[in-house]
Amino acid sequence: MAAYYPTFYDRFKCRAADCRHSCCRGWEIDIDEETAKKYLGFPPSLGERLAQAIVSDGDTYSFRLTEDGRCPFLNGAGLCDIITEYGEDALCDICREHPRFYEFIGENELRGLGLSCEAATALLLGEKELRFTDGTNEYDLASLIRNVTGKRLPRRAAFSPPAHPETMRAVLDLFSQTEPIDERWSEELAALRRNISSTVRAARNYRRICDRAAYNRVFQYILYRQLERINDAPLRRLARYAAVCTCFVFLLDACGAGTAGAARRFSEQIEYSTENVDIILDGIPNP
Image 1 (cartoon, rainbow, N blue to C red):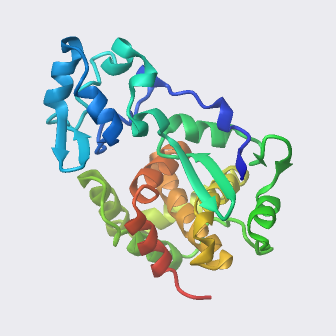
Image 2: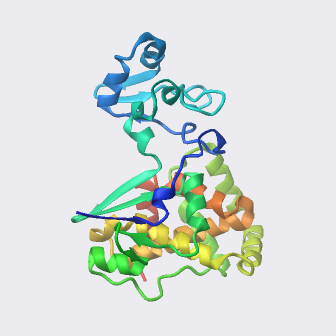
């Protein structure tokens, strides 16, 4: 099996207490069965807390979040009590692996870092060019796609900032159909649609000054994450999906979220929900 990953992949380092958008808040945290059973056998110093914090529904386990949606082991310093007490090897699978993702196409594995993580987003935006490696050779996205799928990336597969109000409205309408991750998402989206004239004006002004190279990296990376769907959706459609999603990131950015903040917000809302990805893919009109 060949494994491909972005060249910045091995430079990832969790920001831990310095992270402004901790993955230990606002997410349901599942625990793999093996680790859950290990936790339930821990000594009393932490074991009692673990036993009280684990919710079990048959064969599934998760942490009981606090009233404000935090992991019960996220301490006041922004660090994990499980790591502090027992080290990183004691983490459950999802906590140890996040924000890494692994997708498969035949005998090929595609690895990456989810853009919901601000450290991962900073790595992508800090690159001059998005490159991938198999540990020996480097590839641009088009070359990687040829190697992995035998298909050619459409020549015009690139991001162009939206200029027409109809395009912006259609993108916002499509994203409003997705299942919201939180109330703030719904409020932000409603405000963009309600004040569409301001959204259009901000986007048109931002088109003149935005970093188009950075946006093409965002476009390519969004496409890269969905390549596993190549057997179910034509490459051209996946490229259109990436363009629509990058357009949404652009609109959030133009209205004040910042490029990193907009990419992170998009990712946590869409890329971690198969249903939401399907809504966007199914909602894209045919060429």
